[in-house]
Length: 303
Image 1 (spheres, rainbow, N blue to C red):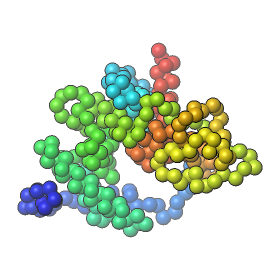
Image 2 (image 1 turned 135 degrees about the vertical axis):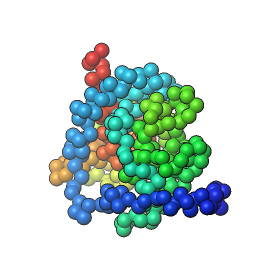
Image 3 (image 1 turned 90 degrees about the horizontal axis):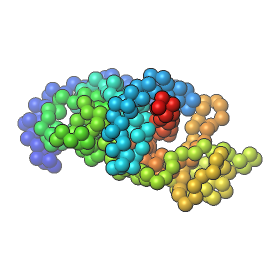
Image 4 (image 1 turned 60 degrees about the vertical axis):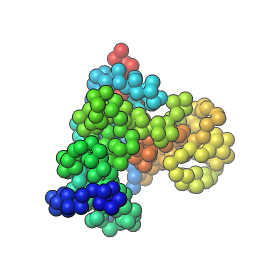
């Protein structure tokens, strides 16, 4: 940090002397010794539930002007932003109480032994670097940030690097404050999705089924976080939509395992995969979409 970013070395030594390794963080990121089969329906029930739906409706009614403004500016509909805030922090009610610098330093240098340990340590070293840069840029004390056990901060649970790259002063008060400004969070989420490929003219997801007596090509499920296939290509590989879908855009296949029951399949446009850049889990992205749609239905019913 001293050589690359011209920090004062003595001040950094004093800062790092104050950092406390956090064993709880290590425990929470360590994979369970026995892995249960992934179960989409169980995950969905935990995430799309009455508390989040009612809180989301209240949030939407309170910040509707800014949600509409974000849609006009970035093309991201309100129900997607509301869905993300519901899953991430229940609208700012669960942002985490771990001191961020402790968390990031712990994971940067003491990440548990896993198959991807070196990659994860490098990621958290980068986020620790970003936290120090963010603090210097904003004139804040890096010891004063608090967030999740993995270092995510504020309403939208942005990592420090995402704050530096995508966060906005959407309320116009002259500073970016994702910890206390729901309005800044709204604009920042919309900007994040736009920068990761959101296209306001595209749909998001459609349910599909496998054609009976047809063997699906498993490579359809290993194409990265992007849409690559035309409807004709998917049909050739045994994937048939349950409804009519637009031609002229590309889709990716989404698998949602249900434990020992049948796997659920959907196809998603680049908009779906923009959400997976927020969190790489298909379960996460589908929960964002379906929670947002539930809140939208409730809002329409109450009108």
